[in-house]
Image 1 (cartoon, rainbow, N blue to C red):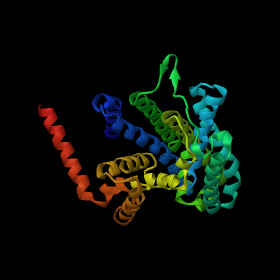
Image 2: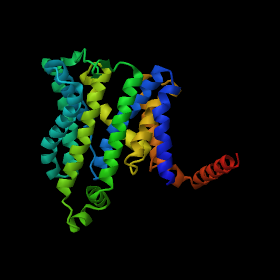
Image 3: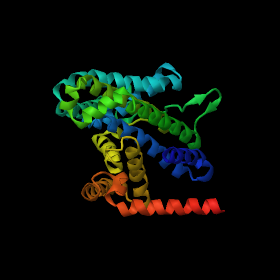
Image 4: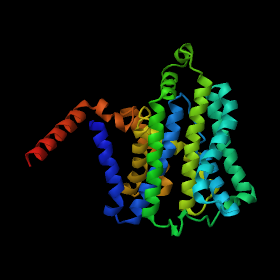
Length: 324
């Protein structure tokens, strides 16, 4: 009951956020936090199955370019192009991972890494995709006469995508397929003994995760109005891993959200330059691995006194509210 109340309060705050925050740049950062959260949850779904992907950026790019080309070349409505971008990423994942997974997690990692490099090179080399200069003048989403062009409109759109992503992943994690993923994450041998088809369940996790990476790639393309191949570099895939790791790898939904928030807003608070961000993130990651190996969300377990302090504060606030 308490957990549901906290979720409801958080959702209400997020809905009301544009009414309080008038700074467009802050909304821009929140939009990026939501995008990175979806990418981080895509990585976490594969991690739950003892798989590490180094190619999330490639599937992000496939979804973005598919949507942008459908809209600009074929005049397909954005609301059809966005799911089409997710389907394109899912089909690409199905094609390469149906082969790679037969070789085990190490082959899966290698293939995901190589595929991301191939995607970036193809997008930059083939002129049909805009080359290294990028794909420009991508139109924004439209509902009838209403065109999405303000930060507030894009904020509500990406918030809706994030909420749908969370609901979908929560439904999967609490279903039969989610229990199979948990068994695989605990022990592959034990899962096999219980009759779990590890290959099929891992393939399903990979395809579903890449579908959502493609969907958010479509949003990114029409939000930025341009796509540049170098955006989807190997470093981007590493950052996606860090979103999940900083928040907590065992928190498959909340972990990427917290990690994305930290990695988007902390450099802004410290005014860290773009060239120093990899150094800053690397140092932060080392500190978290040493002192909080379970991620930031495990701080209550690591520091029990902090959890007890939070509980006392919560009880005091409830007592004050009932007296008033």
